[in-house]
Length: 200
Image (tube, rainbow, N blue to C red; front, side, top):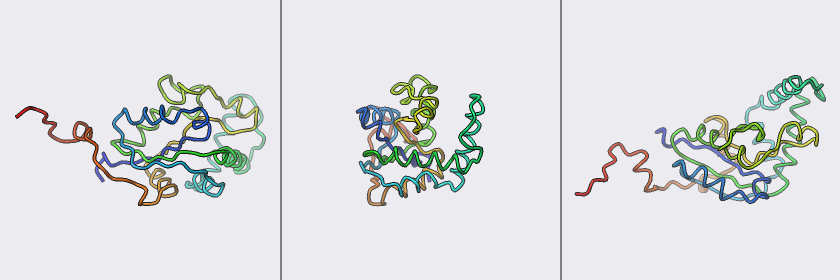
């Protein structure tokens, strides 16, 4: 696979749709030169959401461990010291959140697509995301308020974390016939070896 063919999955979550940020979010990725290869609006069921978050079989434990560290860093006693139990609680909240309304699933392709999309999207916690990122610019949610209200953080977007994760997530959300391979004129500027636009 040529590096320009790297693909990643992006999901605009229910809060992104309710905030009417669909066009703005798409524009951010499109302006970098990434190519939209697939797009659809769906209402996900809990089974699909669970499969999505547990593509990495260690996800529940890892999230639980991160949560415990986060609580400890804030000087707060976590609801549980068992990573599996705490991670399971996070998963239950996420299933409720993602299934609360329609989401938009997208496939973006281009050089370093996974990393570029993550950079544009911003960090998981909007409050501490950099200005200029989607999360940093369009929402102010924080872990503190999410924990206080016993809900997941509302951060507008899911973006695949690794190339391997992206491949598995794309296969979960899209059928092969829903992925379109086509050429954009701008690809010549971005990728062709000889960018020759001189008049004859």
